[in-house]
Image (cartoon, rainbow, N blue to C red; front, side, top):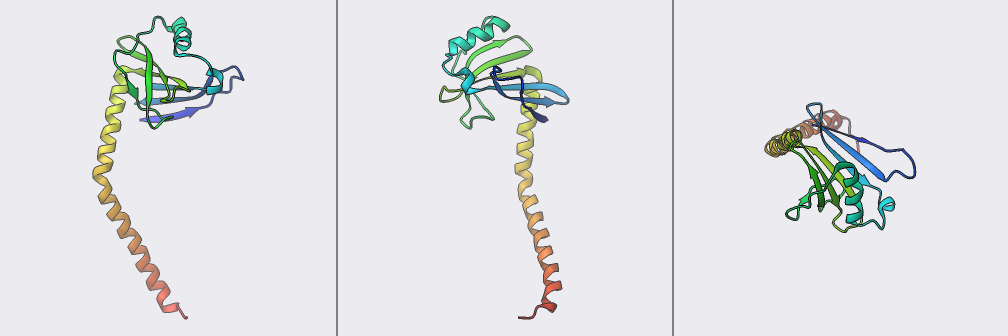
Length: 157
């Protein structure tokens, strides 16, 4: 999976602070939009839902309190509203402290595959970590041994 970051330079009125696009096998699987806190200051969740609904239709409230992982917040973000169909889901999210908003859009089939690939990659890394560490330690010791052979005969206190 490949992720790329693009900066927005539309102007002072653009509320977007950052956009993160994630691809799986060359297809867009996820888009994360972080809104600039200064440009959304004072707006309520209802204001944001109203503005987004004007473009995407009626919002669905989350049926349960849902937290999603976030690159912006280690605690995750709370889903405030959702627009979705069988293939796509667009989630209005809010920071844990209610000060920032964002949108997370996903292709349901691709994002599921991408998330499974990430979990599999993490598990593989965890399994291979001890072997990698031992190999790195052997390599470092080998370099030290070679340096010792070179330096010991020439060292004069």
